[in-house]
Image 1 (cartoon, rainbow, N blue to C red):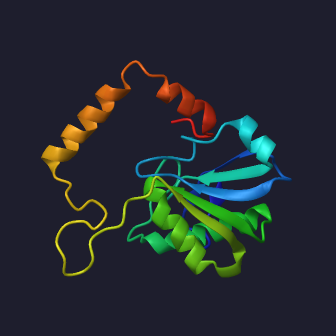
Image 2: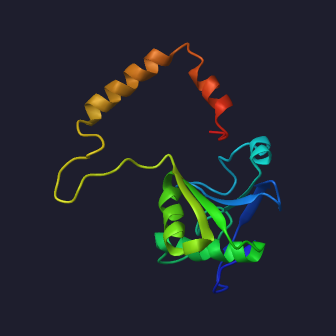
Length: 172
């Protein structure tokens, strides 16, 4: 447990992988989510020399709520945890709803963040003043559900999910 910079909140923190010698990477969970999963497999973290640091964002898991919290507020929490762990520089990765938080850390923490990545991010959205999405120009509830059904039926009986799970470090 780490206390926030102002001392008013508790932040639940967990680490896995190559501790303390590994390259530090903050993993920011999705929405909803928590520090305990889904996470890369231990063996892969060791092989890659990664020290994975996760924490429950305010209001999730064992971390205290933060009234009026904004996406950019996560940068202060990540910096506080990094200071407590003695880390000067680190990478940030956000999965799904954690993606904007990872980008906020990269923007607000300057040279402390060596790299930033977003996993399972949202596709780009429509430009101001236009209607619809530029990433999915013809997506409607009718044709996307039909496409999903067709894709899913074409995969029945294949070993695609098993092959995929062996090649990716994530446990989802």
